Length: 104
Image (cartoon, rainbow, N blue to C red; front, side, top):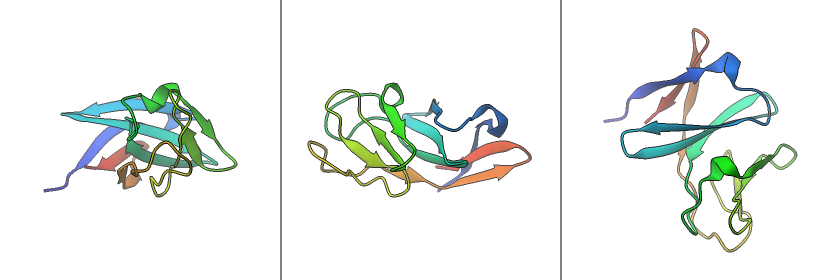
């Protein structure tokens, strides 16, 4: 069953930020681009690399893997270039009372 999990204070997430968030076995990336907050899996689907150590491109709304430079769309999770071929899981976000909640 899916649950809304309180992840972080929305005021602490600035444009261009990437925050790592762990919940049970899930490693999640919270990022903010153009004043919108996104949540995806944090581990690259091509090779085990932590996307929170990569970089966000605000013009493309992507995160780039630091290992092999695959880009993932933060809205859809879809890879935009090789070598990654599998999408990241994306999570719904809600802002409630100033907090970021993620549907897990």
